[in-house]
Image: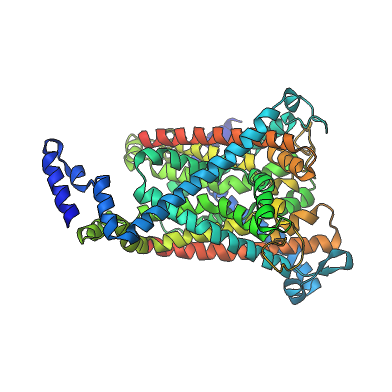
Length: 307
Length: 291
């Protein structure tokens, strides 16, 4: 009770700017006082705060530990053009990662965007096919990457006889990221107001023109955020690539050549256990890429929220 | 040529609709292909080995043509349970903090941190496990360090962002009136959150936990690096263990014939686990949305 009276008194004191916020606001002293009467609440508050602290501390420790141990080993040799077992250069792996990302996106983005267009713009409500597509997309989201790897090995590598290759890896990954692109594009299309479509139809445009000229352009930032999310997954992927793209540590001459990406490179370095320092440095490079991707995606999310 | 252009002009709406429909069916095709190839290669192997011998056999000796994956099934269950014990309390409470306790100033930092935790590749987690968690467990608890305990700690950390983001969304979806009503009745902030809001967010939070289970059971690279990978049933949490996922990656590189098929069959078992978890997840999610 006392706490409430205090609050009321304070509202009177702060009367000049006493708004709804001030009524709901408790000062720290009032809080402490109320905690004295309800120790259970204090305990819960401490537990909740502690958990958040642990989460934040773990991340800071992980990133900090790897940076502190890895940054001193970011030597020029680590970035030489060709890989040898002495310099453990990450450059070929970085180029392979870039190629792998581009190739996977090239397959998955058109498929994902066009299927989202079908789901949002063309399919009628309650269409049974749409339900099936939703369920399959959700299933694809939940499948672990090693199962994708197995499938890629059985289908692209063996059945289609592509061998361990950039193409087999990229096709495997494109199935993996398809649901990500599909879902983000769908959300972006759904957030385009219906009045846009009605206006376009009202001016006599056909369905196709409406989709490509009116509905898709405002959805681009949303689609981009999906692409960035997918890029993050490709860059970090290992299990789906070991038995599809193989682990040759140089840039292949074509899409049918075997290529290891940065994450696979990191796994091999750490597994061999001979080049721990270089493994630290490679982890720094990987972390830097991931942090960059996260920065871009959060900036993009802010822009979408702002517009 | 002109005829083709004319045809396109007249029928482009229909043609493009067919194209959209075809692309939409790709995800169905993908799931169908995955099922056909996995089951097509794995089921015959299970039949050849004998379903009971395969699933409940406690010995995995490819050299002697003995393929029992029971230790790996147990291994996957152990490390997943461990990850849940470590990750769920921390993740759940962090989600509560982020949704109901966090001042905006801290939220601006905490949210990107959780996102980053989700974005860190599993090899980097695995490497962190090798250089930090394994030595830590070895020093403090004894044993070799590569153990169920280390794997559980690492997986618990890895599933944090999944649990946090799904639970946070579930808590935020509870109508504010629940909280306000509880406050008006004289309950404290904490009591309002925990006793009035959380029960309403229960199925959403459970969905987050299930999703975390799916991630933990499917995690491969990080687990291989810290689990020790001995294919036998462990006696204590300080002993090494091999999971279903690790079994596939460890031996696929050199396996041939029945051995290779047995590994694919391991993938089938893993896939079946994941399908069950997904089903559970969508049921819970649907229930959460309905209430």
